[in-house]
Amino acid sequence: MLERKLGRSDLSVSVLCFGGNVFGWTVDEQDAFVVLDAFVDGGGNFIDTADVYGNGTSETILGKWMKARNNRECIILATKVGSQMDNNPEMRGLSRRYILSEVEASLKRLQTDYIDLYQTHRDDQNTPLDETLSALTELVQQGKVRYIGASNYSATRLRKALQISQLHGFARFESVQPPYNLVNRGEYEGSLEELCLEQDIGVITYSSLASGFLTGKYRPSLPLPSSPRAKRIRERYMNQNGFSVLEQIDYIAEASHATDAQVALAWIMARPGITSAIASATSVDQVQELLGSVSLKLSKEQMAALDTASAWSR
Image (cartoon, rainbow, N blue to C red):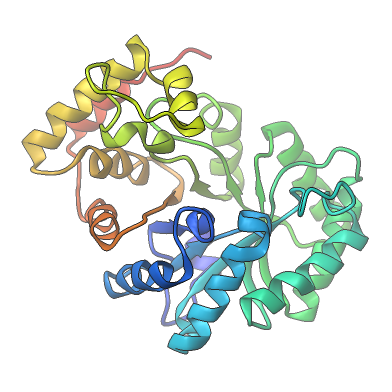
């Protein structure tokens, strides 16, 4: 699994991964330092970001923080390449030229000479997989990247990539990053989950709290903020199925003296094959709440109840 491959002899991947998408968006540099300190103090060491987050701002903030704390060797750092940067259609994709150029920009912003996990942010079907994998293999051979992963890949494309790596002796994708939570199980469970278990591919989930819906803050009886995010949550999750899942989470949270967010994350982290669940925080209180999910162990009966409430059909 990914934790064995990424973890150095004195450092294992934390099962909760801090999502750096908030840096430079809803969290400024000063507050980012505070929440990152709280995450590390609480036992976390795995941080996920991307070049596109804040158009490079997230990586820049992380780089400044690691330099100020002199803790790069204590952090397992993941970033991504491929999404469009700076509203420039030329700055996107997974061509060899772009990957080799953009990794240098990421390394400079992060103020490091290596990235633990370099991920393709989304599939680029306009670039042959062997070109992408060859470029990523060069980075591994140069020591600029330790391992590679894929985000938002279908089972079909991931399997093809694995076959190409085996055929040509390229580095292979050691992880996949799919959206996965109690109200969106179908994009991962099924053929993608089966492939990851079969091939020993690490799984790092994003949207683990369904954009905040699974924190319990979005209820039919409560007014919603007038923001694009709230609109998306209303359209995707505020329905009979979503509220049925929340009802079961509420019940288990009360019985476990936990919060809804902790229950939702604990369910993911207890699933077979899951390496880490990504979640973001904008305050120390939120960081501490998220970290509390790591020690929450749901019973078989509680897991089964959540499975039933969130059941989906293939």
